[in-house]
Length: 265
Length: 325
Image 1 (tube, rainbow over the protein chains, first blue to last red):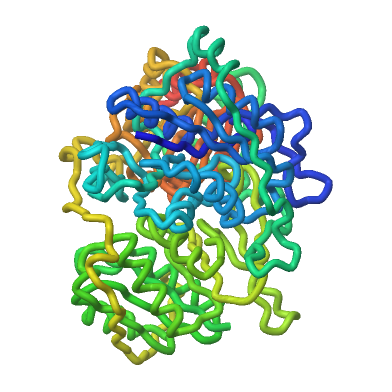
Image 2 (tube, rainbow over the protein chains, first blue to last red):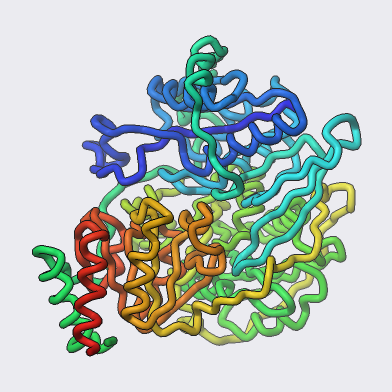
């Protein structure tokens, strides 16, 4: 099976974020970046499927030069090769625009299966995988907790997946291959790159692609349909009383409030 | 502005978020229509027709009996082309997440998902509102401006609009039969199921102490468990803790776990990603303990301590035992 995994590079969790001078994005200088967590699970699922059924895992990533680091890590974990869609101004694309870049890169690969995380930790729109499926003309399913390959090759090839529903419900869905799935965090246990893997990654192919359309909104018929006008710190819906001091003093103050003000003790 | 609200239902009942979506449509649009997709949905349509809207569409077809992404996309696409709204609103449910991005793509649009507010600019005539949504797991908010003509597609976060704000009225019901054939639908869904009977009902708990990533290690969970014991509360967790297998899935609070509203919710080492907040922000008193003063959890908290949970939590358990003695 040939499996494509779309991965994204995002600021590391717990980064302190400041809005950029334009007010439309974050100040990226000084930040560290890592693979989007749900994408890490999608990559792991692809690697496990390859180990079970044979084939090839190709990582696809759209992003600026710094994304190279995340791509190398995917190769070190076991992806066979990678495609880097070099875009410096990712923030100027809407989700459909980014999915179009990924679809352009994916189409000539003719994968049997395409995986990605269910959402990104930065934008969090949660739609890239679904849009990709539509652009590629493939069936899809989302928020997947298990992938079983029923028949890996030929015209009757198909999968049966376990999809998470709300409130602790699940559902199995069968569909023909090729298909696109968005993977839920926790579907598997993530592996670490081995020293050997890191060494091997250095010789693996990263194909760089420069998209035809680097500026998404120059009077094209298919221009973007939305943009971020302003990013800002959210207003607090409740005004939290924060207790300071050494842990014992802070705890004592909190308990007093819980007892006499909130009256929950 | 003409708004079409796509309402979700299951087991013969409207999803509670459908009412919130309809209330949002009333607040945003001058001309509001609603739509139900499925088979055998006439009774539900009558229920919706009792609200102050212009029309209820029922997209009825035997192939829509069970939800599939392909079937729903085709049906709603046909309906949107017929109704021709400026704005299509959805509840941001798992079902919407599964097909609305595909639908929006058919109109060359991006779905604006998980919106928490809409801000109208009354001074600009016929302008569409600015939509507010959360970015970076809730650390920042963003204003989204729509570009180009409609229809635009927007899904709304649970609890962002109040269903009790819905105005009553009387609407016409119009049946719409989309052209569908079985070969269009590639997904074959099976009956939904639950893994096991839920042994822990967090929704009944008066006090919940919940642990998140900040705990760092499975072996440290007893630190938080002891606080739960001191308070006489149930132990719960955010998703990553259950994903890692450190606590069973049935103790998970959040959009994919249980939605709780206890008298007191204590969040320990939980940053407060949107998916967690939707499951607990209805709690009466929220206490947060986190090392990061900028963590989104403090935005919904009533009381907080910024500090190392391994120092704060044992101290808090001790103080609580003293206060209760």
